[in-house]
Image (cartoon, rainbow over all chains, first blue to last red; front, side, top):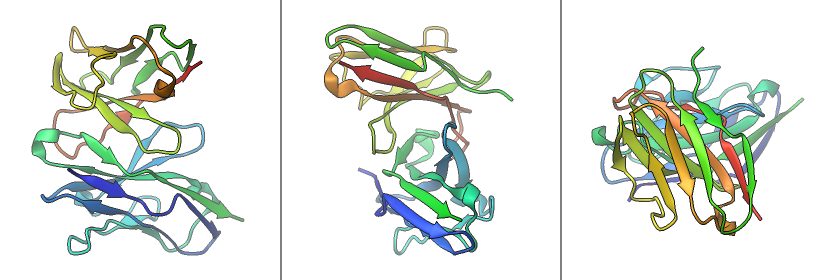
Length: 111
Length: 114
């Protein structure tokens, strides 16, 4: 069975500091990895997906198959980045966009 | 901008009563998901529909939960009877029926069972 682990429930940094939210996964196949974000009082929304290899709002994430990790990084955190971040995976083509989520990391960026 | 609609936003019910949640996905999204999110945890899939057919309900507690999407558009999730442990956020999401496409989430229904 697949599993997503986010070891930090809470992460606090100062504005302008680098931030890294950790995500590790276990799955024997080749999953697709995502980061979803939930800002205060807003709905859960896609931040980025590994297959797109894109940078969104300054965030990037690299899939490391050897370490089975998909850490989310931003070089200079902003106060508006404060939110709950969820790492998630999709098992295979037949799953469509059926997501397995980690437990989430609450990021707080202090002024 | 098109959004997934859910109602009600909040529901308080007594133990052993029946409760139902409604979801209207984004128009054209054939795939619909119901997730349950217990406080402090990530969302967990309960059921996935492709049009009106159930694709995956392996995590749905079928003794008390049921879900339907009769015309392949909107969907209802029902719990009968509700138990204290069912208190959670129930999220609906929809997507196009392809892999790696974005799943769009509703605001959720916060259920409290007393």
